[in-house]
Structure formats: structure tokens, C-alpha cells
Image 1 (cartoon, rainbow, N blue to C red):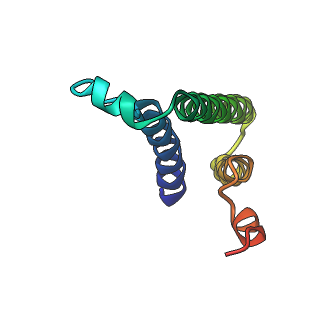
Image 2: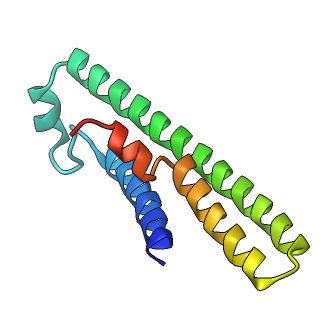
Length: 116
């Protein structure tokens, strides 16, 4: 169950990052004239361009990971249809979860490759 929790937490963190980036603003709705005066037009353009690109990257990665999850679920469903014993199902499930964590970059081998 901890693997499912780890995957779910990861997906929620990605969605939260997208939400926070989309909410970032240099211009406050209540005091827009004051906020606009504090920032140059060039700074505002750079900020919103960076925000747009970060949002695009996160959306693209999230969509890719959802395709990965769907592909893995479909493959697991095919294995389940052809399973002849409970032992086969248990082994297929363990392999499915390991493959899913590996493709979502959540496995221990990926974590050990990242310098701390």
C-alpha cells in the first residue's frame, strides 16, 4: 500500500506545483496601479514568460506520466485476464508496481542516482 501512497502523493505534488505556478502574480487585483509601478514592463514580461514556460513543462510532464500510468494499467489488465493462479496475480502485481515506480522516477535506483 505504501507504493500506491507514494505514487498518489507524487501526482498530487505535481498538481499542487502547477496550481501554485498558475496562481503566481506580480500584480495584485486590489492595488494594481501600485504593483505595476513597482515593476518594469521588461520584468513583468520576463516573469510571466517564465511562469508560462514552467506551467507548460509541468503540464507536459504530468500528461506524460498519466499516459505511462494508463499504459501500465492496460498491460496489467492483460496479464490479469490470462492469469491462471493467484500466485501469478501476486507476481504480476509486484512487477506492475515496480515498473510503474520505475517509469515515474520513484524507484530506489533513480533516487540513488540523484546526488544529495
